[in-house]
Amino acid sequence: MKKYIALNVIIIFIFFNSPGLISQELYGGIEIGSKGVKMSVINVQNIKKGKYEVVDFWTENVAIAKGIAIDGKLAANDIDNAFNVVVKNYTKLLKEYKIEEKNAFIVVSSGVGMAKNIDTLLQKLHVFTNVNVAIVSSETEAKLLLKGCIPPKEYSDSLILDIGGGNTKGGYVEEFNNDNDILMFYPITLDLGTITFTEEINKKAKTDSFSEFNELLSKALPELNEKMNRLYQQSPQLLKKENVYMSGGAVWAFYTLYKGNGAIANFNPFEIKDVEAYNTMIKSDYAKFEALASQNKDVEKVLKTYSQKHLVAANTLLLSLLEKMPDIKSKKIYFSKQGQMAWLLSYIADSAKRAKNIQ
Image 1 (cartoon, rainbow, N blue to C red):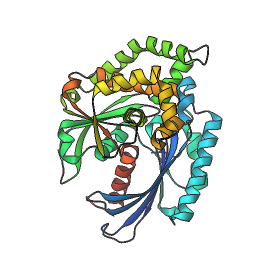
Image 2: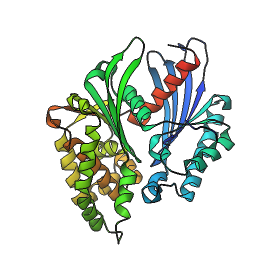
Image 3: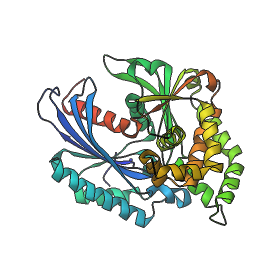
């Protein structure tokens, strides 16, 4: 069987214009994640210095991971939906952005890659694209996230935490060498994300009511908090880090709805008290966000991506992550705006360096 190297599925197209990686180069990517398919077109001026411009970025919602929490598999209709969305956008990138098929890479991220039947989707994509599909482990994904979400000068005193649709991952650097780009990375992972946690609660419910969902969620808190304790016990050294950089749909939804608009800066500070206040708002005053969505495109995008149940489950994960971290009030917490494409950018850069034999 072909070895696949996992889903947010990313199809990365690399087009080189000159041998030195100094002139502009066009990159495109399709990422199939637990909650949606993300498309990126990136113009890179200098890979070694990390200079790039996001030419285009768009998403299509395909909640592919919800079946994993039920039986560990992707539902057949979700596989078909994801495949169709990828094919449509793959064709768009080839025709509109003139990307050559021979320069296409497919990468599957960890959140959906854990599905028992992931090969079904990967094989369908390979037949259509003739591209070897790569499954990135959650550990590798977290390392790439760190490189894409944290300023290099902050590596030694920071950690990254990402709440995706299928899982939560992160880690930190204990030793590194900037000249040789060598990172001694220590990962942590948890097999719960926004979609999988929501479905774990849903399958216990007897009705579709939000009140029952919220009640079941409250009963799940002791077990969730214990899982968070075990998560941090994997690498106690990370608790000494002063800076906490966060990414993923759960943090994006919190920051956008709580602030009333999307993040402007690449790194946006917030405090645990903000997450606590927002937690009350989405449970008791959700109508406020629905009313705001008609006037605010950022808020509208969040509500089209996540239901109220998703938002509450996502923020429960976020709040538990922060509450179980010792001395959290003394730490600096940031939402990394580019987290949605950070590990894609890192993966592209690393792939291009290997292709050009850059050390």
